[in-house]
Image 1 (tube, one colour):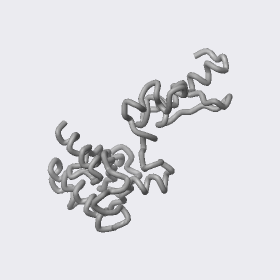
Image 2 (cartoon, rainbow, N blue to C red):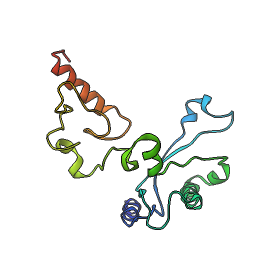
Image 3 (cartoon, one colour):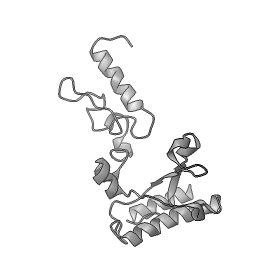
Image 4 (cartoon, rainbow, N blue to C red):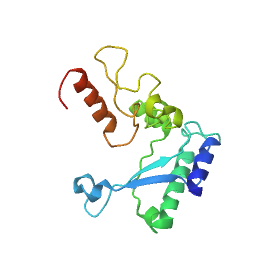
Length: 170
């Protein structure tokens, strides 16, 4: 918990975390077609990364490389030799996510997941029921309750509202 708090504080101070909170997946462990034989694809998702760092720029290749190496070194603490096994990488920073995927501010959750953006306040007060002021237009996805993540709950919830509105039995 202390490291999570520290990572968050680093971001509040405008710097990428010194010990980033990471989620690692290895999709090639279940789909052998995405990597060469004997190799793997690893995906890292790091939390608390500022859009505009106060101590550098994501446009600076050296700055980007330093962040990647910081992440890899942290993994080495738990999986020794990880860094030396990497043959290539691609880094998507918050500005990259905004530019390439249209995620405002590079936020994959489509807005902060603070108390002011949860439950009846997501995306804004009065619009939390998946309906918009435009008849027949509904919202789903990370910007709606319960928020981001790969779980499908916002879509399922919105679909239930659509079915309800059109008189279909659930």
